[in-house]
Length: 412
Image 1 (cartoon, rainbow, N blue to C red):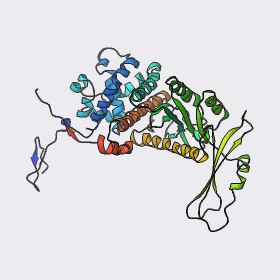
Image 2: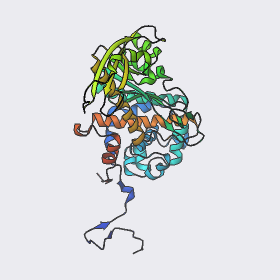
Image 3: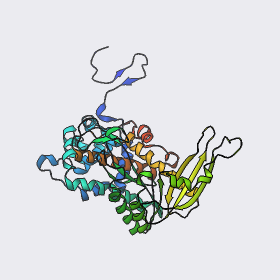
Image 4: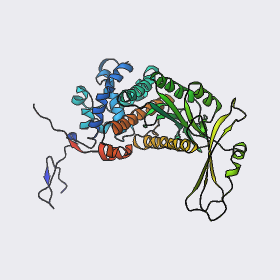
């Protein structure tokens, strides 16, 4: 006991067991090789070569850009939230195998090199813009395999708290924190199509057109039918008009007001008699025109009476869908899945880990997390068995990515 062991040693309590320390040949992230196979089939390396520009010179070019980007992305898929982890994973067999032959022989990048790649090289204007293109074209590769005729787009925002003096961080009264306030656009399958990191004090709907309109044009050129869903944050007449002008159907929640409630006055009185244990739900559709609107629009109301509650729960949705009122509400309610996708991005690929001082560096880190999220989501819905397609990315990370393995080398 206490003596240094240079080789395997036998355990006293069970002589049939031996312990050997061979860290350079053992990995705890063996499941990443499955993601790497999908990456290869989708041509991720070709996208990197096509869009990223290498400004390095001399010995700094020993590791290809594709290897560095893969290390940044795959580290997040495996749950490593900071470049400080690069020191530990640089000799991990999995991270050596997912790269090129140079990485397999030399090992993955160390902390200093990976940090320079993320905060300087990818922060260059051309490379930063290319991250969004790589992300969208990666999803387009999957869309070419399987995509429905009807494309549903969900837009939402979230809060990323900061704990320092990061550039453009600001106090947000709604979230009651100093934060960044990113805007994200998803499709029905959970892929994040576009995103923008914004200062913490901007309005929740700011920059909607920068993300939404290019995606609508892209889908229209492919001959797709586009439908848009969003919460009351995006209940703005300029959004309705932009969607109507492009022939896009929409269902957007709208805040209640006295005029809207007068339109459903007959539904707001609790029925006489013993209340049912099951909620009593009524729907009504009517035309409504707010002061800021140029034309009347259809509004669908949902009124719910719950046992033990004095007042009904009331919600309004402005829409140009032609379905019946109940179908419109059910369609809108599925928008809540976008919030779940955001949570998966925050929990599994550490989307909230924006700890750099410079705003541009934090924009890069957000895009790296989103590419990792999308690669994981494509892996889940295109590759893995149907019986586990409902697993969250965190479950996939813990139960499949975190698979132990041992590297064996053969002379053949």
